[in-house]
Image (cartoon, rainbow, N blue to C red):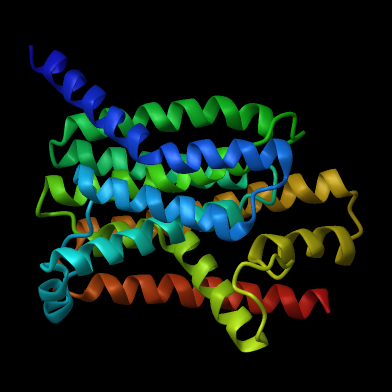
Length: 291
């Protein structure tokens, strides 16, 4: 039957996702247990996942900008860009994993949107994978928020980032109606977080892999704990769910705009810029309130 065929294709695709994720899936838990894996080695592992994924068929396709699309037609450039994107998203998911429910809540939102869009365009194997991921994360979320009884750790956060990247690439490759620019609108929050962090560290002349406290979720936590005087667990849980709902609303609204309106090619990047502007404004507001 068709359902069986779609399930079989989904199983095969899951196998490829797991195979490509093996470097981060192996490195993350070692760091969680030993605390001996440096950020550089974790970055290399996530880049290796991107390279393996590229050879498995998870590749950056059209971004709706003519000359860039021409460059991406070159295999070496496509491989390089794919490695960078996968490594960036894996590290971004680890960056935002600082509050109860935040990483899992955001990933549930992203996988659900990907699943709905895949269903609309008839890519049912990818839709099935997305909904399974979202359901599994929902079970985790119930124990992670609000009390933080279990955590993703580096292994879980890096793995989620790689899976989101692979699913986004697979969906863009499966239908011409969804491009990488479309998926970037859904992945704008982690993309903004890693870009913002790198820019900040370059301006401050600090190591790109050095940890810091100047993230959006950290600022929101400080607002509730320092400015509003809430206990640490209460501030953590409040900040986490507020940010999940805020990012979720922003992402759903952007997706609805792209789906309902016929937008000229390249307009999706303007939506991404609008999302980034909103996140930057929110970050600036919180930083001023915390000072």
